[in-house]
Image (cartoon, rainbow over all chains, first blue to last red; front, side, top):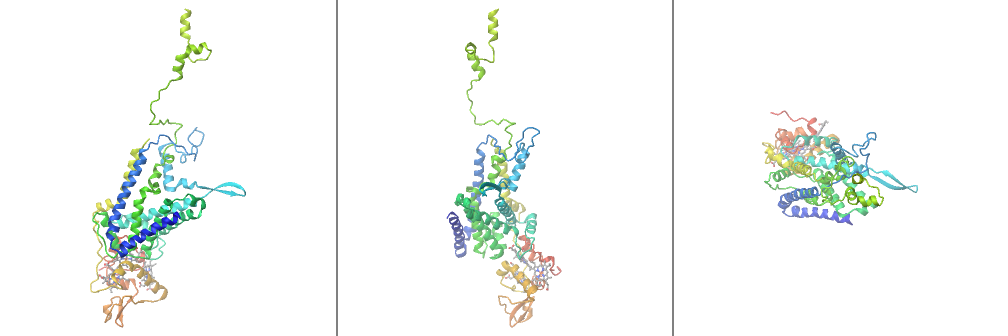
Length: 339
Length: 144
């Protein structure tokens, strides 16, 4: 149901683009107004979400038991899983951001011959890594439409990505990787009962949206071609703030663009904010040095304390009289009396 | 611990990266550049409609390649029937029964009319960072 609703929303967006630019003449709205609007919402939304997070104090370190904490010299310290210094933290963050270390820890529980067993489960990690890296490459490849001159590395990426030279124009491996990764991430939500149970509308919607973007993009490259020179004149116009609408561009391009605008505008309000959030996870980005460094809670207010020494000073005579041992003996006074 | 310094630094890097196309293109000062593929002199039309050629020429070439290499077919009858009276009306092909037919060949057809690869094909391709590998084997006629 939730999956169906979010699919319908994405399809409705495609139909909207068709009505607007295939039948109607609303290219100005779909090609110029919405892209600017979406980018503005994205930038303002993203920055204010992150600043909001930055405002919440994180006074204490949260050691997670992924590896041996730094301890005595003869106990082997796991530097990357339980970092102690800033560089080690950077190492752990790189593992997390570049290789999805935490997802790699994923395990599954299963009944095996009547016993509960835990085993590694790497499919989620694989699907995620394939999708994310494909997405990165696809984004970088799109720079050819958004820059003039095109930076040198875009050509390198294209050459590496299309090295199988299948078809004309060549098929890029990351086009397939993107769709396959997303497909897996969607299917696991649909077919694994436990995962389906915890899946929400805002889990399905980004997946369908990204699948919509990927498949319209794939169609535009290989099956529903339209003049790319005109399209680049539109994008460069947007970039240089002197937009001009080219003629004769296929409506499917506007559908692709509308889905991308939706993604941008939706991004700051969605789980996709893990793009920024991963850098701010306190269990990952703080050195686990609680045993060596005292972390003082910044919002502690001054508490009025009465120490044991002061207590003893108040009641020393009575304590001695009652036979309670005291730390500081009432010696000097007694000695003076004897003299 | 707020670490606002680091977080704001990270945000600045993120926004700078995201807006890379804007400042890069503006700094290079070529945002209003549009490629100007040289129009052939003398000929009035392409093999197919111009709009079709702009978007689909690579598929036409792919189709031709298969026809020639796999099926041994070398003559192409365009969907668009270009009228002609003699062979000279159909550069890169010939005139038969008043309609142009073309030689399915990269060098002997396209580059017969579009004489310069550099001033025609490459102008568009450079603009969009397209690097067809065809030229690894196929030759463009010597540039004048």
